[in-house]
Image (tube, rainbow, N blue to C red; front, side, top):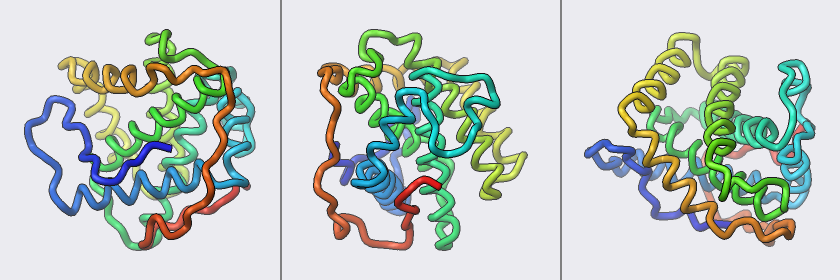
Amino acid sequence: MDDTSGQAPADSGASQQASPDEQGQYNQFVGRAMELIYNQKMFPQVVQMLRGGSNDGQDQKEAGQSGPAAGLAHATAMIITRVYKAAADAGANLSPDVLFHGGTEIFGQLAEISDKAGISDYANDRDKLEGAYFLAVDMATQQLRKAGVVDEAQSKAALQQLQSMDAKGELEQVFRELDAKDQGGSGGEEEQPPPANDASMQGGMAPQEEMD
């Protein structure tokens, strides 16, 4: 598991650095997501989702989406939604930048797990990585709306921001960072979750440990 403590969100072409509050939110958001992904009971289910299966509803099947790329998108959206909803329920007001950069870090971590498990080869398939990323954004937006933590106006604004970044070429830096993160990730052996460390993150964001 990558150590996310102390990592400032990538600015993706923006000159403004994260504020201390945003940095703290980012560290906690990503840290909670990693705890959820690498939970001893959750991790095998996450891997199953990355293979294209689903333990968290029938969204993929209903949408006619299947396969590893859809599995990566669905797993990313599920993790983001659970952690974000837990934060909102605890009274946290996460900034859009924290959601974007934190979500991108979660996506990259899951893509790396997928490659290491021999499910995919995103390290050498940029098109599939990009396709899965945009699908993950779409799924996460839908799930966040369904969970009642963002409204239609917020989700439209987020998608417009993403489209604007893409048009300006700012997403290229994001994908370069994802490529660099994923290089060497396909080892053909399924990654195992590390020993649980419940004390690694303290605070109000406490996602559910198992999928329903």
